[in-house]
Image (cartoon, rainbow, N blue to C red; front, top):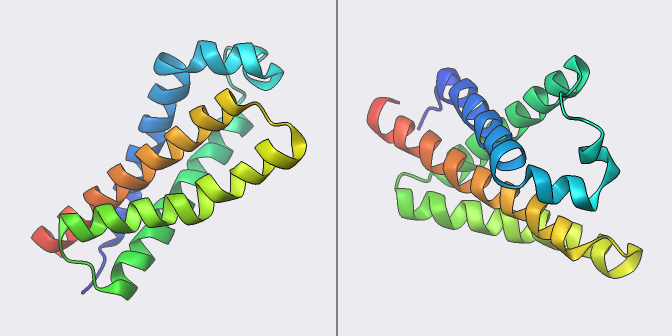
Length: 134
């Protein structure tokens, strides 16, 4: 199985759009009420946008590599991979901050929800493109 570079780049754009909707339209107000980092940034700086774009590229590339290494060729397996990556790394990793550092549980839910949606959408998208066109 070959992963097309275009699917990784498109997956990164998709992750970026999901994040913009998540933190802008859906949960921006809630995040701003919980963290000064979100309250202060009504219009993000160019460096923040660039960093987020690179981060989304890393997410898409990492998921694409895992999809290739595991030989995933069905959307159901892509969904399972997304959930396992999210649960094992994002949700579990950030849970330590809630328990040990007093990180707000609502902010945890916002961030891990974003990570879950991105993992699912990008994994399904890359798998779909790979199985159809790769």
